[in-house]
Image (cartoon, rainbow, N blue to C red; front, side):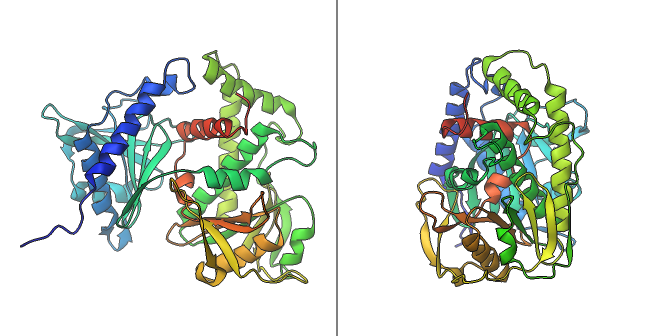
Length: 423
């Protein structure tokens, strides 16, 4: 008797379908996502969801000339917009074709468009490149590593498969632990929109760190000198740079915050967006800045920067601060619904890179340390804002990977839902 080595749980797929349906039903024209979901051409069927997930899973285990293959599948009708390559004749939706296409579409990022034919059989009609302003309204299934699949809808992370586990995603721990560190001490008040911009820039930098596949450590520190006590001297590469020439000063000029606020307010209230170009230009500039910073993290050692992305040094070695007692345990969270965390010994975190970052976050409780592994795993370290205990958020790549306007909108909505923004 032949046994199948992998079978997708039918109850999981049914629950995923229900959640997609609820998203569409709740997105009335007057809500922030009304304009987003009006572009959805089809509620995906249970069968199509299963087929896309299965294809992504098997593709993730395949290599092309020795290299791992990652693909992004979007259930979308044929698109004639700029940046789209439309096949003259649709091709078969199978792992063999996905592997060939995936190897060519990783950089720059592109999504493979799939759509059912007249017989309701999925086929590949082409692909479309992404930009910072990409808005994916439909179902998207991404293979992000061997046996790892992320499922999003309209830019919202809904669910994921890791090995033999399927679960629904919840980023509450990541947002709750990290955003408390992102206020601006210069103004003695928490500019909520500024915190959103800072949070999204952290995700963007970690996303670009995953792309160079070398692993790296990013230390995000407050504008004090205390963090230097946890860095060995001399530092090989020090000096300072911001890698950005923008039109507005995020921390000092309220005109930009007004622009961002007006932009999101227009989305909520369905008003004309008067300064969309300014916001788009700012987003592109910050994205470019994050890309430059991420490249520097490929150098052996840690990179230290401010929350507004001013780089102090890179290639730094983390050491115990004077009189610091190394932490023995750490509470680890994962972006999984119902997860309350678990306490583990710091020696069980992983390699030297993870343990050093944890010790830095322990010694510098107002900082955030981010470690990206060579295989793309992302872990955030910081002190819990409620009790000061050391915490880690593993599998943070599930929050890092989604990009584009849709992901930004969902982060904005989540901030507002957690009372970190005024809508």
